[in-house]
Length: 77
Image (tube, rainbow, N blue to C red):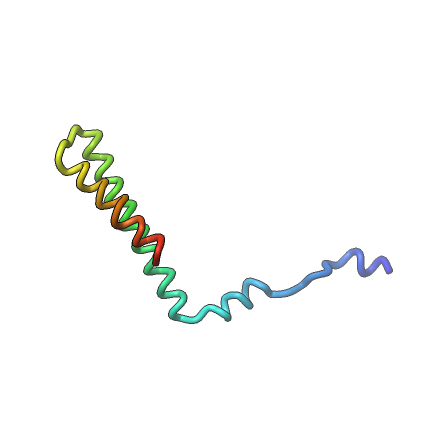
């Protein structure tokens, strides 16, 4: 009776099971989604850096592309 209390009740290899369920296409689509997020972050960072520098032309273009194009693409991927 005390033996059941001292050992864990649920001993499953859940992370291993989940990784086996993922196929190569799911892994590739996840990395593609992360790629889009990375591109969006870089464009937004460049836009804010140019904005801090005092850019009047490039900063709004980069920020608009980042927020209106790349972030929605990253969300949908």
